Length: 206
Image 1 (cartoon, rainbow, N blue to C red):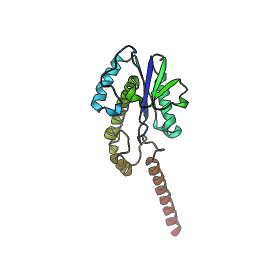
Image 2 (cartoon, rainbow, N blue to C red):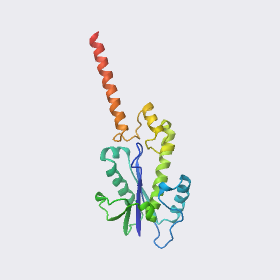
Image 3 (cartoon, one colour):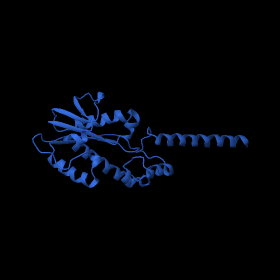
Image 4 (cartoon, rainbow, N blue to C red):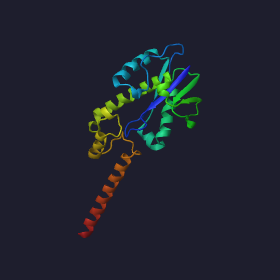
């Protein structure tokens, strides 16, 4: 029994990183159409996610919050999300396969497969579930914060998102350790300092 693991959301300026662990039946045929989630349309991902959930032996999700990303950095936060996903599986897999390179700090025996979301069925299934889950979350957050167009960019640094940052500033869902969010925070601090100095000089001149 292999647990395929993948994560989504390392690169965005906003939102959590989400990991998924999936255990598929070892004696069943692969689900037709399952592939790297990035190579699929949103509609195909939604349809395949339903089929994966119907067939999987166990599926579990884990996430690391924006605060954890800013505190521990994105790589360590990704490991936190993966550990949470694996820890929530309803059964203990015989082995774990992850997308990408070996994760030294994972402390769980695993095999890393470069390009695994396009080469390994269980990793691809995990990729799809993680992507669908995070996209739904970002669409929900977009309703509360419409200026950043997260329903379209899912938190990535698109022109619309950067325009929203420039005009409306940061939200609690922005990663302050990420540029250009960190740069915006720095500029805001300078503006505050300039305003304080200007007020002081104005008082002195009187």
